[in-house]
Image 1 (spheres, helix red, strand yellow):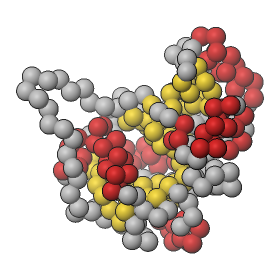
Image 2 (cartoon, rainbow, N blue to C red):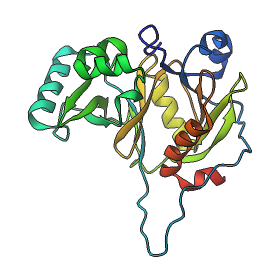
Image 3 (cartoon, helix red, strand yellow):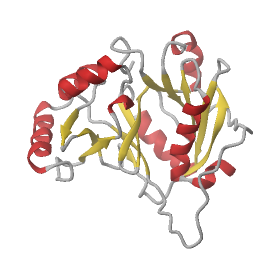
Image 4 (cartoon, rainbow, N blue to C red):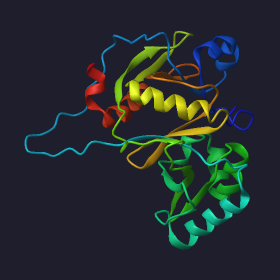
Length: 254
C-alpha cells in the first residue's frame, strides 16, 4: 500500500466500507485519503486566509487531482519522458497525455531523512521502487510524471467542478483530521477517475506543485477525509487547511 514496507509514511484512498474492514491496518498508515462519510460536516471553526488589502488583486489558486504515470508502465515511454526532461526541460511536450509537474519537496513522498537522501541520490530508481511513480531531477528541482487527460486528471481549469467545503474533523479513532467536499460535478468526475485507476497513485497539485499523494483503494465521489495515523498536530492540521483554502477561500465558511 503506497510506500508501506519502505517507510512509515504511506498514503491511500479508500471507501468508508473498506475503511471499516481495514481499520486495524489503517492505524499504522501515516496519511490516508478516504471517500464520503455519510455526508457529515464538521462544525469546528476554520481559520480564514489573510484578508485581501484594499486595491490588492489576489489570483485564485489552482487545485488538481492527477493520476501518476505508473512506474510499471511502458518503459519506452518512461525513457522518452526522462530524455525530454533532461534535454528540453519540464515544460516541453513529453508524450501524448503526459506532463512533468514539480514536487513541492521530497518529503511529500517520505519525510524520513534516509529516504529523502536516497531519493536525492537516485530519484528515478528509488521512486519507481518505493512509490510506484517516476520522479526525476531537473534544474535543481524534482518532477513527477503525471497524466494530463480528462480520464485521469481533475484539473483546476476545468470549469464544471469546485472544492465546496473544507474543515477540521475527527477520524474513526478520534484523531484530528480534515474533511472536504466537492460539488456534484466534481464528485462525478472524481468517481470516474478513481474507479478506473484502482491501486494507482493520485497526487494533489496546488499552483502547479505536487503537495500530497495517495494510493487509490476504491472509487470515491463528492467528499473525502484526510487523516494521519495518530492524528495531526494543530500546526499540521492548519497547514493542510491553509493549502486547500488557498484554492477556495470561501470553502471554510460554508
